[in-house]
Amino acid sequence: ADGYYEYGMSECVYSTSDYSDMVFLQSYSFNQVVDAQFNSSAGKFVGYTEEGVKYAENWNKNQALIQQLKAAVDTFCRPNAQILDSSVRDKT
Image (cartoon, rainbow, N blue to C red; front, side):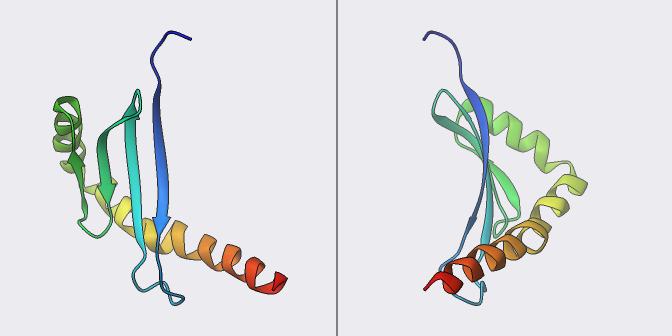
């Protein structure tokens, strides 16, 4: 199928049971190439392509957006990880 494919992906990455190392990542890709990514540890977007650098520069100017995404570790990641982890523990 010919055409273009653009998508975003949000991830919560951690390796400790107390979630102390949890990081929220939000990536934006075009045709399987990551253009830009937000990393809650860095607290900003980073561009990986020419277009992605432009996007990152623009998004990083929006402090309300940056604060919302930095908070996603506590508002999105941790609550969902606790639910998913407890459902796995209950099955073992």
